[in-house]
Image (cartoon, rainbow, N blue to C red; front, side):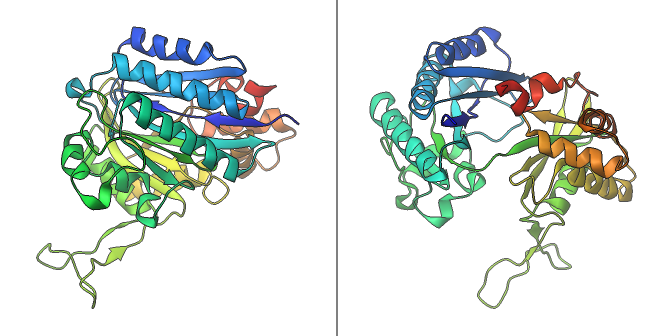
Length: 340
């Protein structure tokens, strides 16, 4: 079986189709790479791109896309709902077939070194490629976002792994690393109040929330550290956002290991938590691609008597409301079908 790596870069542009198209063309220009999808979101002001190919080609395509984004995206003008630290915000490399996680870590490091040296963009390594424990979590690196990046770069604890420890005003910084397959999964609420969505996110995400006393102050443990109340779901990151284009609030979720928490479990838990707040769940969406297995798991949960895989997929799409905002086409959204 040939070696196949998936790359899912997120770019801080979700409105200008010319820029998004140019990034796509930069990826297509590299031999041995297949561009599977590019999904812009105007509210997030962000585009999630997915492409696959042989390891060496994937690294080159990621660099060419980053160079294009550095030329066309100006972070000084960027505002959006989603946290971000740079024009090419995050570039994960994911082993798909015939390649190890260690090889994807090396890909991330080679890509990061090149971006830092040739484009003069600060680069941080995360997840499996992280150089220290506190940098494994993408949220920790993004803390303060683009607006706080100049201050972060002056902190000796946040010297970038590659590139200059200097602010790149136009491009910000880039985060890269290697990880297992992540499903970007968002649940839609029958409300336009993002505070409700954020409350649900705090309840379900693995990291939970800070425990507070009767005066609303953080509770500290014997070591002076803030006490956390764990969320209800493992391997889940989440936040609440407002989708202005659809006038709804949404619980934006990253399922970092769908074998631990698959989409249907997250969907039902959001529904349960929303009900306690007097709000209904109306549907959901998958941003980027999903493994077929994740949908089959949902189909088996909702219709264990289903006769075949096609029936299971149909049930999963219907019960999760995956076509509420935009028609869900398995041929375009399931990675196995894209690679066949």
